[in-house]
Length: 351
Image (cartoon, rainbow, N blue to C red; front, side, top):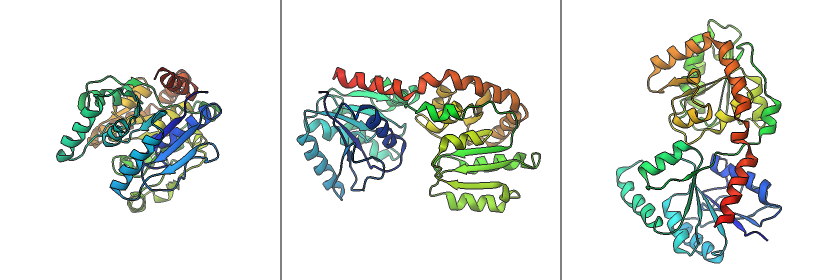
């Protein structure tokens, strides 16, 4: 019988790294005993607890650390797969006796304040004295980890996606009728720039609409921005969309101008439907669309350049749509969840 696996997340709440556990439940649940541990004392809203054992941590910071340490001691002979939970949790895992945990990098920001760097860097360095298997969800996130955190080379395993629903919605777009965005409405995503770019061309495309899928803290201010503009009746805020593959299938141009990402699931999902995409100049995005320059708008802080490249892309929309359609087929194997699961399973077996 294969070893049990424990997935450690900050909370069993919606998020990129946290959602990936559902792939592991579906892929491994019939042959492994699986556990999900929420470090924060929050209820499970993500995982089917008939398929995975769920437990949440202590209510306060120290209680969180102490209860997690005890949890590790209880299961110290089993596999621990940590999903971007940081160096303090990794160090606690090792001190509790867990051998060769898998640390999964799903980010590129490790500290925001200078005074945090010294103790977080120390925790990373101490953790590196023990055996840890580091994996990253893109070459970009692996390179940032190597540059800023530890001189190690994480294995790159791209996020896995269920290809089927996106393939069913795959088509070559022929006309620009709907522009779209999908993701969280929060700082750094630059959704306000998506609205501005829409307004740049809306007067020339009287039937064009902007559909924004997602929710977050900035939704009220973004709705106010839309209402203050001349095309408010053509900008639609949809909230969280359950069938995101159908959403991508319903739009003709996807604009994603995030300031930082370690991967970009929504971008890969959009491309899998043949949807033309326009993005900021994040290296992870270039990995996904394989360096296609026609899809790059540039630095979100340089709006004049964004605008110029956006107008050029729209003017050449048929060629853009053709490139996206051809790319959609070539990236299927790269992001197929089955390939992701096989790579992770191989790591478990090599421990």
